[in-house]
Structure formats: structure tokens, C-alpha cells
Length: 174
Image 1: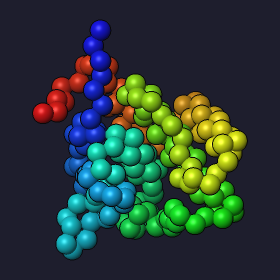
Image 2: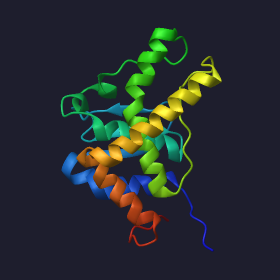
Image 3: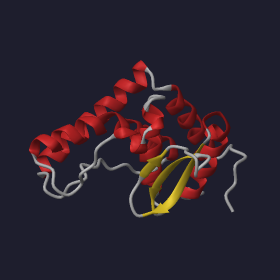
């Protein structure tokens, strides 16, 4: 039996094939912290930076991009606030509400790749019970999106992932 290899670089190639021309956007790894950077006078392309060479980070950042409106795609990091180290309970709840849909889409992307998915609350202080609740919410949202429909960019990427990870894609990473 053949074993799938999950390389983040393959995701970059798949993303490029799907979106480089229509959206002038590149998926780029190798950074310490994820970031979306819209094109400007110095950078001719929009760039989605994902953490190091982490496959799941690339999927997650594409999920965020796939739901971002035209207006948000013109803003650094889609205009979101981020405070990873010192969230209180209210801020953690807000964070998780903003993360629900992107993580549900990331779950669907992961399934298409036959890759394991773990929900992220992005905080070490969240109790395990709360993490389990969020995990159920993400899975439920993924089911809902599967029925009600995904944003068009998410559909395009999901279809490309499904094709590539079923072994029938012409994209080959070197």
C-alpha cells in the first residue's frame, strides 16, 4: 500500500495552480508567525505566510483566506486582531468564535488530504473540557458547511486537494 506524503510545498503548488492568476496571491512558508500581507507598492503579490513548513498551518491560513471578503483581503492579516499570550476568558471566547469557520474549513481540507486534524484554541490556559467543546463545535460546523455549501475559493481548493491526494493530479513536487 502506498503512503501519502504530506509536504507543505505541495500545498503551495496546488494553491498556485488554483489562485495565482485570478487572485494574484501566493502561499509561502518558512515564517515564525502566520500572516496575510496584501500587495502594495513594494510587493506585487498578495501573500499568505504560514508557519515554517507546517502542513496544518498552510491549510489553516488558506482556510482564513478562503472566507475573507474582498475588503478584508486588502488589509494586513485581514484586519484581525491577534493576542496569543494574554487572552482573558472573554477574549478567548471571541477568538474561538472567529476561528470556528476557518477551523471547520481546515478540517474539511485535512480530510481531503487524508491528514489528521487537531482543533487549536491557541492557548495553554484553556481547560481540556473547553477544548473538547470547541472541537465538537468545529466538527458540527464542518458538517453544516458540507451541507449548506462552502465559499467558492474553499470549494476550488478542496476539489484540488481531493484530486491531488487521491493520486490523480498532475502536480508533482520535487
